[in-house]
Amino acid sequence: MTAPRTSGIALAVGLALGLTACTTVGPDYRLPDAAMQNRPAAQAAFVGADAPGVRADPLPANWWRLYRDPTLDGLVAEAFAANTRLRVAAANLARAHAILHEAESANEPVGQLGASAAREKISGESFLLNKNIAPLSLGNGGIAASYQLDLFGQLRRATEAAEADAEASQAAVELVRINVAAGVAQAYVEACSAGQQLALAQRMLQEQTERLAVSRKLVDAGRGTETDISRAKGQVEQARARLPAFEAQRSKALFMLATLTGHPPAEYPKAVAACTQLPQLASPIPVGDGAALLRRRPDVRQAERGLAAATARIGVATAALYPSVSIGLSAGLTGVLADLGQPETQRWSAGPLIRWTIPGGVEHARVAIAKAGADAALARFDGAVLGALQDTENALAVYARELDRNAALRAARHEAAEEAHHARSLYRAGRSPYLDDLDARRALTAADAAVAASDNRLALDRVGLFLALGGGWEDVGTNGPAVDPSVAAKAP
Image 1 (spheres, rainbow, N blue to C red):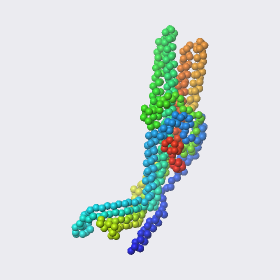
Image 2 (cartoon, rainbow, N blue to C red):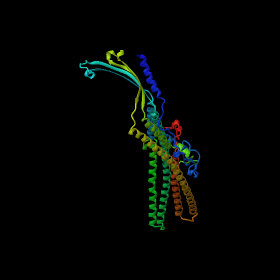
Image 3 (cartoon, helix red, strand yellow):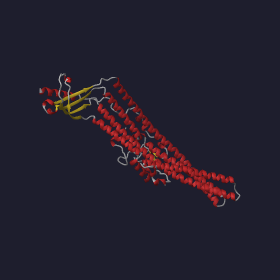
Image 4 (cartoon, rainbow, N blue to C red):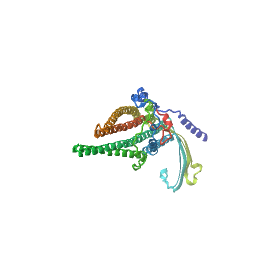
């Protein structure tokens, strides 16, 4: 009896192993030829790349270092180490990797070990015996192992989907990182700009106060009217009213910096509170081209990885239409506790197990749902590509026009400075009254304030352009969550 039994087991195992010449159903992922990213216009130079203030060189990894500002560098590094949004993104990435490990583990054999002992009263009639069976001490123990043959690639496709999801989570970390860097730079610009404009507003208040004093002297000398004094008082109050707005702007920026760097608002960076000079770039902004942009932008890569995951899930749903085959082995002891280990209590089994849910409307609907999900993912990917290009072109256009406006304001400021110089010379020569000199100085201060406001707008536009370009995550292993090189290599 041993030889036939052994040959039967071998036949069953051999049959199961023969089924491992399997296939993987569902489409293999590749970037569709019709994807928006493949269009020549998406890969070309930007429309605004020839504008002043930019150049076609590649964007460096840590764009904020182009400012050569140690304070800004320190703030960004601190934010990368402690920002709460980055911590959430890092936790989500760890969760995605755990899900990937779970999917990969489904390809491994599953083992079970169990044992039990109980005092049990068995019903005689359950064995069709018309007698009472005395209570027995029963034992049961054994070991079992099973392995699912992935004949149609359901497990492989599930692993592909989980891997793509993990890569999308990595891109999400990178997206948060560039937003944090841009947020720190914007808040730093706002704080320094507020300090600069506050100083100019205080200068204007001083000049208006001086004019009020002159108006009073003229009235006392019989050369002015009370109307002149009232007008001068109103101008003083208008100048004073500008101060709280800049103070509030500076406080808001300082509190934002504290939050971005993982501190309560009361622990804002004290050194930045005294800043009155905007960070400046020593050279035009390097912008690269569309092809580099689409490789660099994390949101584009995140959408592309979402498309890969959705494509793999078509295979998962399709494989569910086919049978599932597993190989199982088990052995153990079952019987009266005192007899355990005797031949009559031994048991074992080996062989394949085939399960097949005959496909119906539900299973086919799931395939259709997965295909529709892939279509939606492709549309999202195309939308991310178009959005990245639009963001960059918008930022380039806004930056270029603000450069034009800034140049005009600086020209106007130059003329105001010339007028103030001539007015001061005439006053000192006794050829014009003091009020003319004071008015010319007030006009120069107003021109300085207009230039300062434009400089602020220009500095924010620069940061907005850097944000649109999508850089700031590529510095692997430095300052916070970094990109996995294997993920970057799979980016489109």
